[in-house]
Image (cartoon, rainbow, N blue to C red):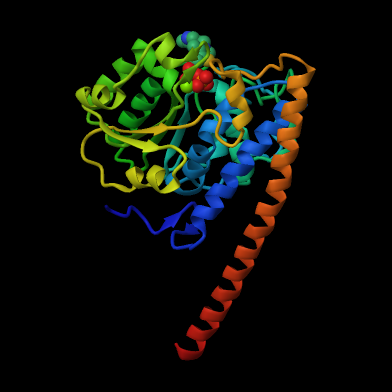
Length: 346
Ligand SMILES: Cc1ncc(C[n+]2csc(CCOP(=O)(O)OP(=O)(O)O)c2C)c(N)n1
Ligand SMILES: [Mg+2]
């Protein structure tokens, strides 16, 4: 396995607690989305359950992004792009500058926007108070993210367009000799659409090995289990037959998510199929099967059960945070000790 760089997002790769940090961020993403869904009496919760580790690993370890110079509390909506609108603001700026050596992030399943905003909060690109604007008229924090929403570079609410957009960006980057890669986050429902397969075919044809796709294979779409609506499996062999390099991994295993992005490119676009649990962290959600797509409480009794689950999760979170703080303090003390030692002996 080839190491691409020793520095990720400005942090040293050898930080011994990096996995704990990513897991803690993933847990917080889930919790924040859960809290928000409770406050709003419904929302896209199963997507946070399935993809929290994916978002945390992408932002904290996998993608090489520069710092964002966007406001922590987002601007109000400044209109659609066009020559008559110099104020247009692109949400991709929350992922840092478009520099030749830096990666780009193309976010595809627009209804996962709340999970994306929660991830941006975890990595300090968005203020927690920014979420107050969620789904309010005149703001950019759309429930279905669009190209002006924090972290969202292109509009993809009509699903399965982002892979084609990413292919165009990746081809442009290669023509310009840029070393930065193009990461795409997709949902599995998008593999039910023809445009996805046309895009894979084009990525392979143009040998766009600067594209790395992470797919949240939670085996669910809006009408229920993928297998009941339209089966997409065997996804690995189908993608391979289209010329892709494919890794099927446990989408909650941080090492397994990180490793494929560290391999040297081999002329093929990479697909990481992250098999996930759409009830991860909130087992109560299993009562809602077969349809998990959007949480809308059936009655007061169900809401109470979720309130109790949320309170229990909050309590656990306080303990986890205390533990993480201890680990950070120990690490700091150890680093101080070893650096003093090296000064004395160096
Ligand atoms: C082109 C298009 N067709 C249909 C829809 C309606 N739609 C919204 S979400 C969704 C499910 C997509 O599957 P997935 O993202 O895997 O669902 P989840 O895992 O979040 O439940 C569908 C079909 C859409 N937004 N765009
Ligand atoms: Mg799905």
